[in-house]
Length: 104
Image (cartoon, rainbow, N blue to C red; front, side, top):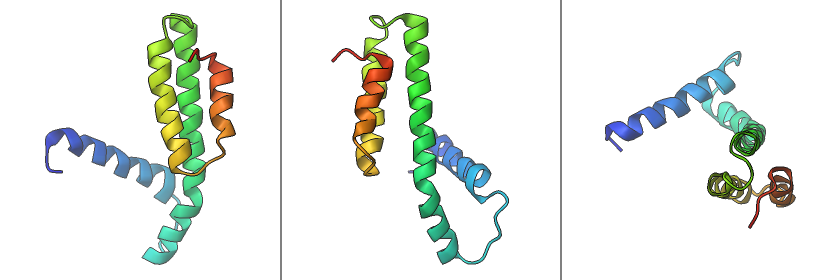
């Protein structure tokens, strides 16, 4: 896309990869770099899931379980999408629900 709204999103992803993945790595070729990135992707996704859980927990603490339900449902949808897309253990979803007390 060439629209201004998506420019910042793309730049954020590039910055994230530069800082969290490429920093302190020696460039040994694109194939090796791609292979290394794929091997580290699961760790990045798990960190993202931890962040979503922390955000959800904070919402419950600040707003209370009842008032946070709409936000929690949206966060859970993102959490579920990541788990399913990356083929992670679906027990993570039950653990998420249990930790934040999501009322379905």
